Length: 438
Image (cartoon, rainbow, N blue to C red; front, side):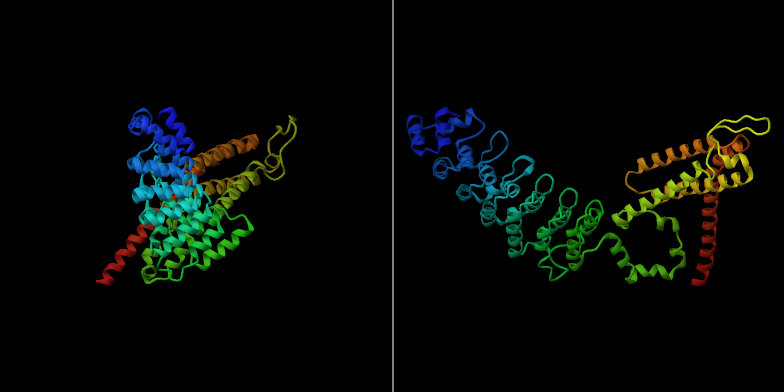
């Protein structure tokens, strides 16, 4: 851009602009060839309303141009908050507020992020459909306002949506599948939650309180995951009063309908697979219960592990090599003095530990961080085996080695045999029931 033109634009000096046009009538046209921006970008950014009007009068097409960063003059004016400039630009073309910039952000998105409530109101009045425009991350202007805690903008958009009967916008999802209620709950914005739920006169219309995101969570689930502050209980009550539930509550409620309860009339279906019932299922089990289950699992494994490596009586603290009986530091005292009791103890404790790992392996099949869980269990198993072998006296060491080696195989074979037996009985029962139904 010509230096003199840039200075005149920066100062908002309309008289200087006319002088430059007198010297070179094509100066506004040539400026587009020498720079990525145009005078309207600069004037819009500075908020020089008279200069903007003059440029629009001379070159209205400049309102459509974007600078090297991909922003139009309206993007700049709306994000900075120059409401009068926004109004003048919208007179050129109301569709300018739907012009996409970087990441598909429109001027309305930029104004929502920065909290420019007056600019937002101007654009909504000029182009009502722009409220449904989304970014490349599928964020609406309301999503962005909530993510950036712009309460003034949130109130304007929410009121406008209700006034225009466009409540479906409340249920639009971002790229994680979150509605605006998910985001407001995640950020603990009680004021926004009350604003969103304040008109829930009919649960079948408007905001979907129990909408599920891509992680299988409702807004209520998100609150339970991060429930930590005193005010969270108040938010919980607000959500509950609006009919919000977690995924666990939804599954329990669904069993009350005839379609779900029909399984109770068929004993073959109710007993189909007990293991599958107890497995973790995303969408069925609430995050709070899952976290509690993990703590119980960790405590169970830690308890059996602790008893295995620290048997009753403790370990010898010295080496002794008398003519009758030898003991080495670190070996179990109980194992040296009562080998039969020690063998029984190690067998049943190892059985409990191996069974715990087997059950945990089954029940956590669909847990998050599956690889890390498996690696943890494998490491604990090898650590346990090494520890119990090292504390076993020479007289029972072979028994301990055979026990911890055979038990996993025996447990696996027993579980496999049990499943086969149960499958055979189920087949026999099916064969018996079918002739009776004919």
